[in-house]
Length: 77
Image 1: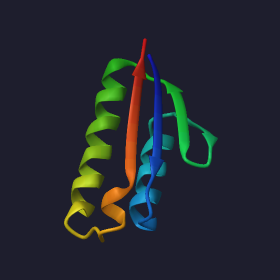
Image 2: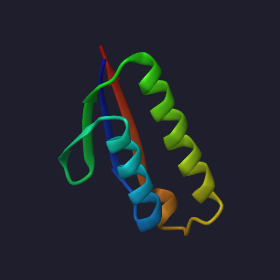
Image 3: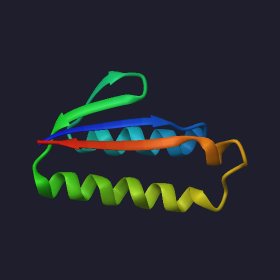
Image 4: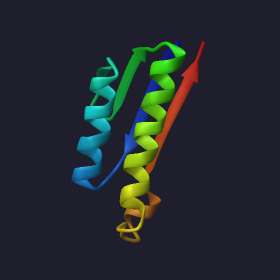
């Protein structure tokens, strides 16, 4: 299934972890903050779990500005 990950993240460490997770899942960077890839359901579930884990780790440390930034995962068949 086609999977898009689009993000606007101001925290460099979190952004780097999101980028690495996308690359590790076999996705390709289409634009600076957009990754696209054809992922099977299992790989997609693992990627979503990894992205959620990374976001959760940084949620407590977010500044007011960072709380307005976004991570969007678009799944299409």
